[in-house]
Image 1 (cartoon, rainbow, N blue to C red):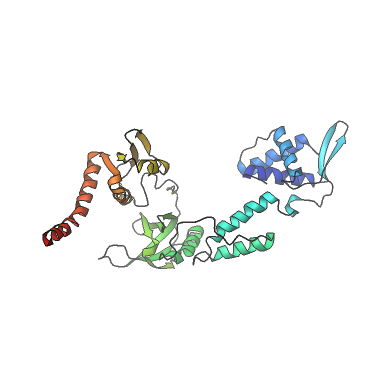
Image 2 (image 1 turned 120 degrees about the vertical axis):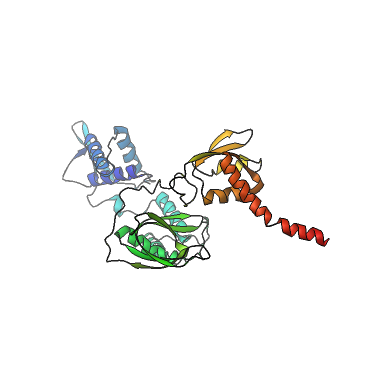
Length: 346
């Protein structure tokens, strides 16, 4: 079973050579052909003689394809070809290893059946099951944290199509603020991101030329703006766009990245070290259970800190410690009057 892209390229190349009866392929020829294929598809070559022998051994094995390979001698050197030019690994049934991995893939894809935005999954699964005579086990063995009732999921197919085909959109949107009114923006869609079971669209505003973050569950309607030329993204690498924050909320540009030290309880420390708050997380003092993260403070960071309650303490910097302290005091005020009232009643 091909286990990676390079191996797959080598197997397909060897297969092509073995069924080419118009040429004789000696081991050095096979090495050259595999190097050329890797250079073409990956931009890098480098194949050893031992690697090709290992590939041939695998292709001849039961774990591979049991290929009918002949070794014919011309003098003292050997060339390789199939017993018949009609044979090809592409025409063979799946190996047991391939069948197991494909069956697992079908089971994983099956987890997405039934979602309104994933009708295409039904077609993919049905095609795989029919073509390879495989049926995914009806018992789920993989679970995904997903919110099936989340508003806005129906917009995903149109957004993906617009991003792929560079189509300008007019989005009617209403923010989370109670007093906010719905408004329509013309945008150039660039990137979709999922965070905390919700989807967000990153798009350039046509008027202000700034990147705007739209929560899909706050989008009321979307339509194409065919009368506006698309402005392609040439400057932003969205794979690293959120590197300095937790979540999807980017603070104003004048907010700098800071080092925040956090102390955790004995109960919480193992969880935080096994599932870091942020990729920048480092252990400062394991014995005292102190960690540090380097981020730009935002709403999602506050949410994480406050959600941990008494299991975490912000040690520094003082400005962010004071910020969290004020948040906690505001929360406490909501309970103190109730508690006083109950005490007076008794």
